[in-house]
Length: 151
Image (cartoon, rainbow, N blue to C red; front, side, top):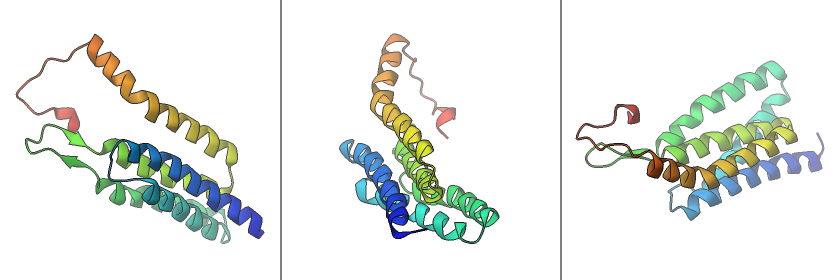
């Protein structure tokens, strides 16, 4: 792999992380441009390095990334004082998605990266307004019990 290909893969992984991080940053979330940019580069680096060893090794590395990155994402998930609301799940999902996109950059699957980033941006941009519209149309009665699905 030549230097231009390395730069393209790492640069794209960083760009994907930056785009997702910008969304999180604009929403005042603890994970932003720098964190997700680094996650993308890190995932791409490790996949590219493992790819030199062979496809079976790269596959194991990707499995480790997908599993291990959950610990970083878990650091941004919190419950409020009453334990009824969970915050940070979207940011944790962005951390995980950034690692996956970085891995795709590492193997050079550009169509997969671009389509995945496109869907992610649409979901992050339109998901909140869509959820609010559905809640206005179909209000959920409030209860004193914590929500079982948020555990």
